[in-house]
Amino acid sequence: MIQLVLGDILDMVGDPAKLGGTAHRYFSPGALLIEDGKITEAGFADELKQKYAPKLSLEDCQVIDYCGHLITPGFIDTHIHYPQTEMIAAYGEQLLTWLEKYAFPTEMQFDDSDYAEKIAELFLNELLNNGTTTALVFGTVHPESVDAFFKQAQKRHLRMIAGKVLMDRNCPDNLSDTAETGYLESKALIEKWHNTDRLSYAITPRFAPTSSPEQLAKCRDLLNEYPDVYLHTHLSENKAECDWIKSLYPDATNYLSVYDNAGLVKKRSVFAHGIHLDESEYQCLANKEAAISHCPTSNLFIGSGLFNLAKCEQHDVKVGLGTDVGGGSSFSMLQTYNEAYKIQQLQNHTMSAFKGLYLATLGGARALDLEGTIGNFLPGCEADFIVFDTAPTPFLGFRLAKCQDLHERLFCSLMLGDDRMIKQTYILGAPANPFPSSFTAESAQQELV
Ligand code: GUN
Ligand code: ZN
Image: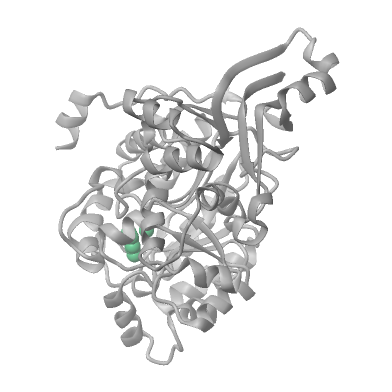
């Protein structure tokens, strides 16, 4: 099937910190030519219409008209916990007590496959409403949680990466696996789901305090057996967590070295947060081609600290953006940029809207080693994209109409927007109308309270 999507087409082909004004492409009035769910070309509408005239006259060619609307690649959320959907906005705690009081009790419910599937439905609908088309996702310790998630993601034809939490100490008994059972359960899930349709598996030790050295060694065994699976964990988020690492691993040079000594720092390793790092940790991440997922709403909400983007740019560390729901306070990557911008302002570092779009799209794709597959509109990429609204509310319509240039229009859309700014999300060229959720507003209240 051939599709021509008309609109103001904007994507990133590089990092603005390196390429400046040549990092983005903007075609207005522009078009995307899509064939069988993949991008053939993005360009100016007139040029594409001329170049592809014979194809466009074919009977099965569909023209989708979003003239005047901004169209970008779908957002990539590089760190999020689907089981924590229901406890977003949990009041009053910092990381370690927040885990005990809110995260662990919530996650205990996910041994129930039916419940896990209902939450996965709700979660995926929320991602799509917010224009997020790919995410790197934590499950819980229960393999059922990952089966439920992948089943729902597969039904929606989504590109998703997820894994079962590995956690064999310092946690409630009913959320604990062992080095051996965690290994066997992860292996079975990899065999079942990894590289099935658009799904990939991430080995997911929660963080070093809840995995024994034996469990981290088992993670390495899995990476050796399945070299193209991901490694997904937390790193240096909170000061008390970092102190805990020092007492658990007194011989470690720094936090990252705990993972590095276990052989877990490599391409396709994604570390959430990375706030309190020393120079050698930035350098190690860069040398090993590992990535950080920066989660600004979470870092502010749980009071963890200010992420140093400039250091990552200096050391050439790959960075993507993450919402970290439920530690993060929004599913929206627009709101995530809003808080990222302010975190950089507090450090005298100005983060442009183009840098924000880069982190939310191509930067995320690079962090996930998926450049060329998702993240921009270069030929061959999968056609997951977002159509922005021009006036999601009368006031936003008024403010956007006052914008003088592309940067201002993008900045206002990111800074002021949320799910209302996303007019439509497309997956492989098809509109991602939210599937009916098992929860209506009323039944959600009854069932979840
Ligand atoms: N560190 C270990 N587990 C978690 C979690 O669930 N959320 C966040 N934000 N940090 C963590
Ligand atoms: Zn997290």
